[in-house]
Length: 141
Image (cartoon, rainbow, N blue to C red; front, side, top):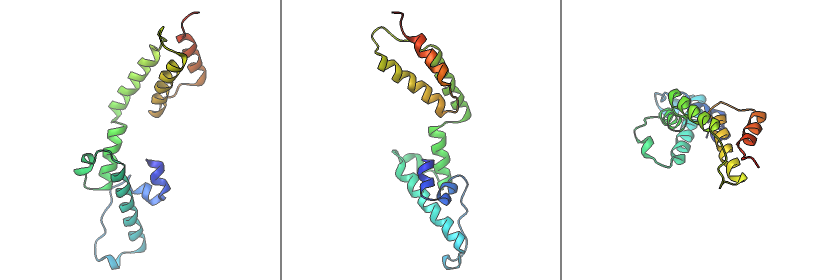
């Protein structure tokens, strides 16, 4: 989502990361920069609302910033949720093995989901460790 917002302009991407203060006074007397920030806020607000699969998440939000914070917590979670997800993925990584009825494609797909999940949460496993883990997971022939 951040990349999409950046594609709409740096102002649009920045506007969601801080609360927007609505300009005071008559619209005709706004400075150029105020108009550009207002337009960026409107674009960001529209994009965030369009991207939601369930608009009820944003109904109680009063600003674009509130919607953004809500989405971040929903998709990334709080720091406690993030730590719990990392712990769960590391547990899956440690216990990773191949069952007799699984194909190589199945285990590679499963392993990739685990390592991609860790990577998306900021914890990476280097390629040598990944290769060794997959080889150890294979049944003896």
